[in-house]
Image (cartoon, rainbow, N blue to C red):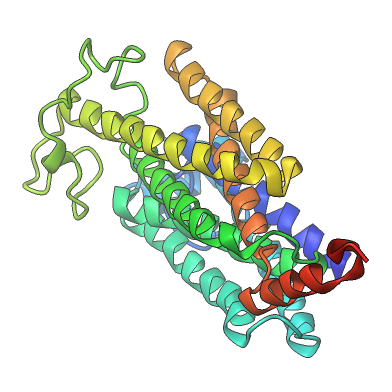
Length: 337
């Protein structure tokens, strides 16, 4: 089980990174249909295939057929199909050998996989609608968190005190909120709307149009009323993401402070990942969003999520914590016998 769970977890992380690469390289509509690409199982790259694709999908595509973008999208889909097989196999084995795992925790990854496939289809058919693409990103992160939980519970021994559970849950919620805000920045192409740091367009105040920019049901680049989004709308989205980063910094700093005595190792891992993620976020602004740094920023968020979920999975149950405390209090070593 352990090698299979580790492989599934690594595969999921790589798929999240690959999805970020496809999105950030503007290849999300490299194939205008789903699940194939221009009606075939591979991206068209021969002259006659490109000509046929243009003839068949000319009304549904913007610009010319681009084989390179099509291949990026198809590789992502093939990778997602492989993950589906791995998750099904892992969950089937966990179901047979479940001990500390609930049935719902084993079935949830399969449900997320199915919903992710639907979101992948809607991403294409709804022409990169921001709320759909953001939900697709959150679905990938949710799957990563669920698999991290399963792998940790199945392979690691709980050893963290139960008193850490509240701050770990708060930190997990803060990470998910920040991932959602980061996804909203990315899917609205607002990463470069704030042309400075720490200020946004020369001010610390929120740019105008935040409510309009945060309306979920609208097309890419437009308001809910169908008007074009202005730069201040995009800057407002970016500004809110920075505000979320401050909230996350506060939560994780409190978590690291509480972890320092219970587990210096966990405190060090989370602190290192947090500093890396902050550095990547600032660097993306300073260096105008180079693709490697932008993809790495997505990976940094995934690593933070995995670490906090794995730490939460290692928290002792309350009854076991009480039993351990009672044993430590009455044992000869602690009674002075």
